[in-house]
Length: 146
Image (cartoon, rainbow, N blue to C red; front, side):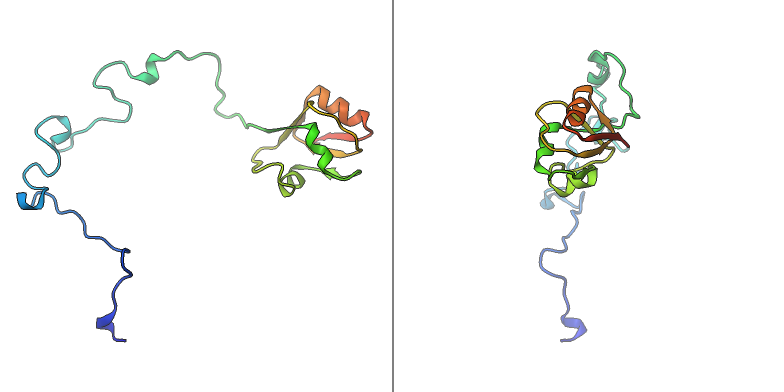
């Protein structure tokens, strides 16, 4: 093999469209911009969300309440999932991820009270509902906020 025999893998390169190079190319004259109008002009076009001067959708729909943009949303799990672990286990976010009960856990876990706890666990989580904490402690376990 010689240098003059080298070529890129098929499909890895493509030839750019050459606009405005005569009308046999299919992209001549108006170069794919159509006839006149704001988008046909040099530097023409509008910003995202602009609706031609009509009140934009983002401003037309009502906004209610407070949306905290700094909120750190917790993953929520019911205490029913704890029965998948053996008695006396220490359960934290990493243990839940390893067991496949969570697919991601960016900010922490909150346990909710649906289901029954039959085994004794030490559960470490970012938050617990009152009923979840009650059920874990009633089974002889510990609910630790981390």
